[in-house]
Image 1 (cartoon, rainbow, N blue to C red):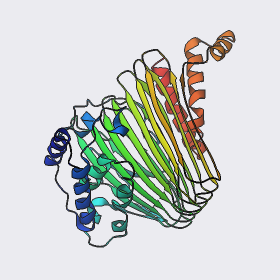
Image 2 (cartoon, rainbow, N blue to C red; image 1 turned 180 degrees about the vertical axis):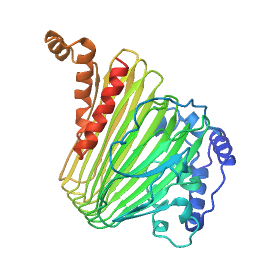
Image 3 (tube, helix red, strand yellow; image 1 turned 30 degrees about the vertical axis):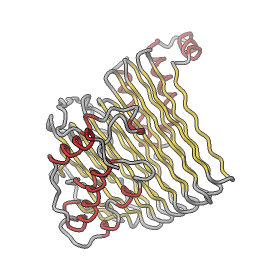
Length: 426
């Protein structure tokens, strides 16, 4: 079917300002992705999975201006011993980065991969993204596969002694960054990946994660600081038997953020948990879109998303659990909740279950409401000031999502950052 003229024109205008990087072993994947972008067209509000979020500024030919955010607040995760990989406006910065050497893992830049004809990432780059286009089209991810100019390939063969930290810095008010990372976790290997920073005025990031049997990946991400940034991120994850994937995202600030997670549980007894805590104020739009496919026996998935919104902020959650035929003993849980601190904010939710197996335990729920007046009165009656009481109840509301972080020290860092955000806006 031919694209509507308006969508075709918008797509070609976006493609016209992009250039294909030196491709090397990723050339075939990039050319395939360009063809898919042209076939799908870039998203518009008329598309089913974009009806709650206006994608115009994410697909326009030029990035919208975004003022740099100045703050004396320490960068997230600064207190942790980690291997730092720094990108400034989407470009790897070797001066600020650590040496990319760590036991149990090998790390290559995407630029280096593209100079080679043979590399392990060739069999992964663009593959999970392409698989994730069915049944829902994700053209911004295909655009990323085609035109990503930088990123890293992380091959985990053991258990590194410290996390790998991807740090994104924003230095130009009109920067337009496209980053693509690929991660392969081998059998019985385990790694923690941290991400933080605003990255650019407009940020398109894709991460493809392949976890072999018995492998584990823990992911903690903090999106914050810049008030005017716009971002679209995708994480595509495939899990083997007895593997574990746990991902948590903290989002603060930003005009528009769309985070998509596409997870395939393909091996028996795999576990996938994805969670998010979002706090938004004013001209703030935050969209979590999640698609989890159970295609094996005895797998467990959890989706836990909490959003705190005020002064006209908007939160969106679209989450689906698909249980394929034969995926017996599935345990799927999904909860999305919002705390609206005024009458001007809104939360839009679309939870879904699609089940083709008969021996499963699956549930989903979504709620939206104000602070519990009884609990607020209880705290006030014991001398707690109203602002402090409100902050305590807000942190309690977000706790279920934060508890999905397995490392207690990382969870404490997230709580500290939330407390700081709330105290500044009380």
